Length: 259
Image (cartoon, rainbow, N blue to C red; front, side):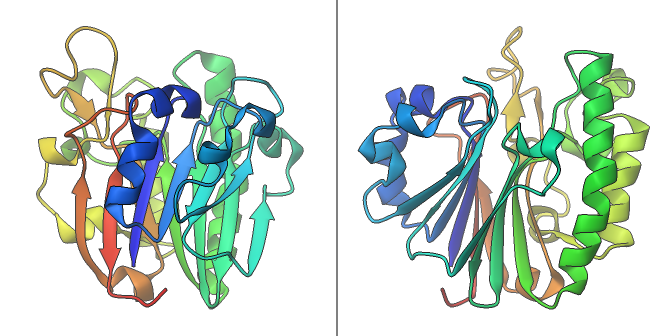
């Protein structure tokens, strides 16, 4: 089973950069999308259902903002749109698709980089989400949580870690929270499990400022985080950088798992 996660920074923009031509070549079973920046009426039929894939979307209420989606080779048994928390659901940040005993979730955790108000919203999301992560972990299902978490976990996960210790995305409180997700709640960082020492090749996001992409001054903030059972079935993980569809790069993980 192949799962891809990608922050599009706008599905319409990514489409103009070859996304829909690239997708069939990947032979993915599930593709998790973040930051659609579009409502359903904005999507062409090809965007809604690319070749061989069914599309499901949870847009934000605000036009041109946020939103998540899932493409899947087979139709899910059940969909869960949102977390039942109005502040979060209005921004289109959570979409869960259930396939038998497997749940795959597309997640877009808020960024706090634009100011104190958004950082406070990010912390509220984290407070709301931790109990949900605990419930998912204890629920007996295998789960893969894909998406843009907007947190680089450790120093190895970004180039300029020293100068970013007081910046959103690498704050001590954010990193401690993510450590709790792994070490206390019991989730597994699949890429890091497979590539414990990877640095520059692991980055998934680059600022548009300066020459961050050209110099590979990046961050690893896009993850596939899984329950231990399916995490143990992960056989390979790679960040795709040959083409650029947005300021993020796709993260692909192959699991020895029937779909």
